[in-house]
Image 1 (cartoon, rainbow, N blue to C red):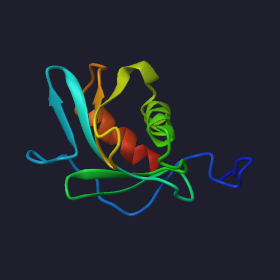
Image 2 (image 1 turned 180 degrees about the horizontal axis):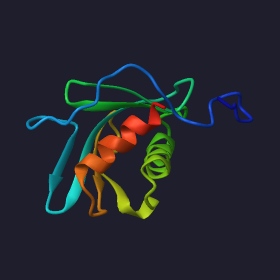
Image 3 (image 1 turned 90 degrees about the vertical axis):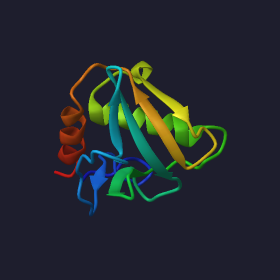
Image 4 (image 1 turned 45 degrees about the horizontal axis):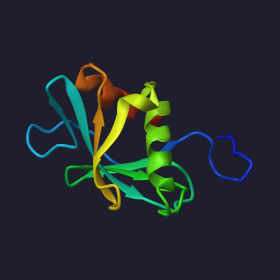
Length: 123
């Protein structure tokens, strides 16, 4: 993996964790043609990565500190790059000042597409 200027990974890495869609309490749901992700952000990490899936939440590690919305901006950028969608299609619905967030993705796509994108990050 290549390092960027700060010595951190420029490409996201995927650590342990089994990703699966749950019928109840899963990290990914679809309502009204929109995708909702339950995300727990871990700021000030060594690299940007999707760490694991547990307890119905997708854990995302980010290098930004949780100061003045920097981690929120980096989360939106990280998700848009990995899901290959526009930043304007991603919105933090709840949890702006919390580590646990509900993300709305307004793109009309099959939820399996997002699960496959998360799995693809690991390779």
